[in-house]
Length: 55
Image 1 (cartoon, rainbow, N blue to C red):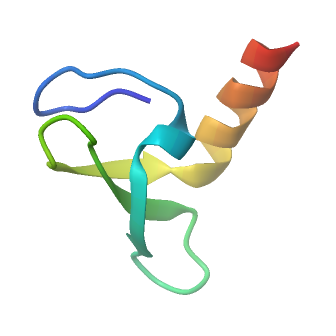
Image 2 (tube, rainbow, N blue to C red):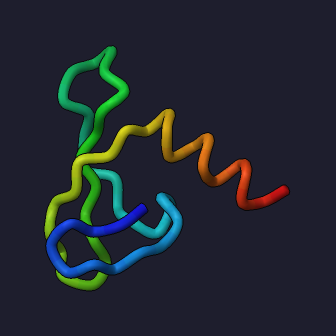
């Protein structure tokens, strides 16, 4: 996952979870640990990326 504000890049779990846009949405807001900017995250897409990195 990459912060659109400062360019910091790390695993999704590094970015603090804030909330989902709606209860059934795949999209959520997370906070960058470096600049504290809010980043829109596609939770399912990021989960897939992390699983391929681990293998």
